[in-house]
Amino acid sequence: MSAPDVAVRLTGVSKWYGEVLGVSGVTLDIPRGGVFGLLGPNGAGKSTLMGVISGLLAPSAGSVMVFGRDPRFSREARAGIGLCPEGDAVFPGMNCIESLVYLGRLAGLSAAVSRARSRDVLDQLGLAGFAKRELRKMSKGERQRVKLAQALLHHPDLLLLDEPLSGMDPLVRIDVTTLIRDLGAGGTTVLVSSHILSEVEAMTSRVIVVSAGKVIASGQVAEIRAMLNRHPHKIKVSCDRPAALARDLLEGPGVVGMELGEGGIVVRTTDPGQFYGFLNDAIVRVRPGVEGFSAEDHDLASVFQYLVPGQ
Image (cartoon, rainbow, N blue to C red; front, side):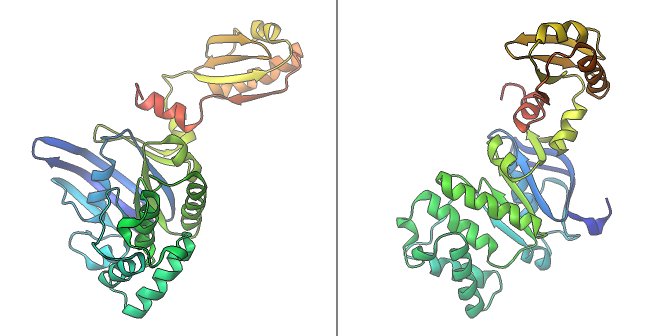
C-alpha cells in the first residue's frame, strides 16, 4: 500500500510500562477513509495502540506515522487527529459548552469558530439542551457524548474512538453508531475500539484483532475467516429431508462432520469453495426440499472466538 493511501502506518511498534508489555512488535497499515474496528479483550493493548497513534504515548521501539508524519513531533499530524479517550476528565466548575469551546481553542480554533462548532456538534449528538449543564452533574453516557463532541470539533481526518459507546443508553448508541458509519462513508478515517463484538459489527466489517499486545489478524471479517483453514467452516442447510441429504453429502469435499436436527443439517467442511458446488449437485440429485443454506460462522463472534480462544 503506497504512502498516500495510508492514514496510519505502524512499523515494529512496542510499548513497555516498566516491565509490563503494552504492545509488542506491531506492524500495521490502516488505509485512508472508512471505519476500522480495533477489537480485543480487556487488557489486550487497544488503549496503548490508541495512545501511540495519537502521539500521547511514545513507543518504546518502532515508528508511528499518521498521514506520513510522526504525531509526536508534527503539529500538522496532531491537528488532523480527533481523540475520544476511554478515561473521563472533567474540568471543575465548567459547563458543557464552556469545556468544548476551551478544547476547541486548544485545537487552534478561534473563539467564534470554536463556539459555533461546539453548538453544532452538541446538536449533532443530541446534547443541545445540555449546553449550560455542569459537566460533573451529567451522567456517564452524557459525558461520553461530550468527549465525542470535542473529538469532532476541529473536523479531523483521523478519529480515534476508545470504547466510545460506553455508558450510553440503547437509543443513543444507535444514533452514535450511525454517525460513526456516516463519518467513515464521508472519507474520515475512524479507528474505533471495543471488546463488544456486536458494537464493532454494527459499524464495520473491517477489523483489527488484538490479543496480548499483538495484532493477530486484520482485514474484512470474511477474509480473516477464510484464512482460518484449521477451523472447519460450518454450513447450515435448511430442508425437509435432512437425513436423505446428509447421506449424499458425507463424501463431499472436505467434509469432517455433520449434525442433523429438525428442519436441517449443519455440515463442517475444510473446503467450502468446492463443497458449495457439491451441495448444489446433491440438492438436484436428492431433491430434499431445501429452503436455504447459510454460512454459520462467518460472523465476527465466531471469527473472534477462533482467534482468541476462551473469549
